[in-house]
Length: 226
Ligand SMILES: C[S@@+](CC[C@H](N)C(=O)[O-])C[C@H]1O[C@@H](n2cnc3c(N)ncnc32)[C@H](O)[C@@H]1O
Image (cartoon, rainbow, N blue to C red; front, side, top):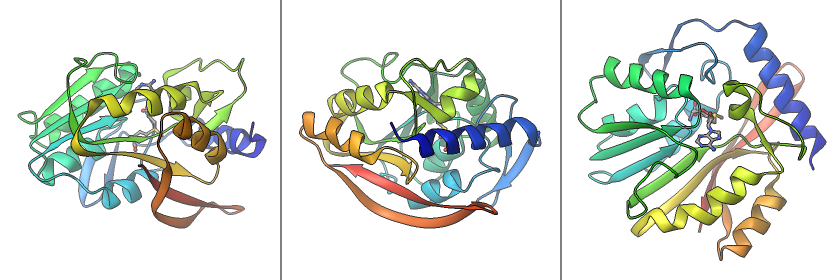
């Protein structure tokens, strides 16, 4: 396990808990609601970077796993996707995504589901792009995500990453793509092993280094599982 990734994930979680984020924030030229216990896009650069970089399928179907506040799902709907499905295992995140979908008037094309990965989907549902800005800090096997917010940062033994890699391809439309928002604190070697088992290869399609606190610079990476 990558101790550095786990420790950095803990530092990010502590910052979320101690900084008491505001109940609204501005990002990508729009205003957003933020509920307690939901991953705050105002406190790390990831949401803005990935939401800007994603190749939203114009006129197509987009699935966001782990939608959090819903910034990316709403951006997808406003960028020309015909149908957006946003899901999250956190009930607070589901409520938060619904709030921002309503705030931006895209209820007609965004469906929000409470779901552990793909479990709430019809097995036959297909998407042109499946995306997850993942909880890329690998936690020890016996670590328990005791709150909704923990799920935003930690994946014990990368069990959820393994399931994502195994299950996402079954929901792809012809020519569809699977992408992961990742970073250098994630366990890329383990992800690569899961991908190899599934006949896939993780490829960095875009990356950028950003200082996240005075002592830490991280590289954020948009991966495609090809
Ligand atoms: C790093 S946060 C990203 C949130 C949002 N997409 C963003 O970019 O601001 C990861 C999200 O994945 C969700 N998540 C973690 N495990 C999940 C699972 N098994 N099924 C669905 N969502 C999950 C978390 O609750 C969290 O909202």
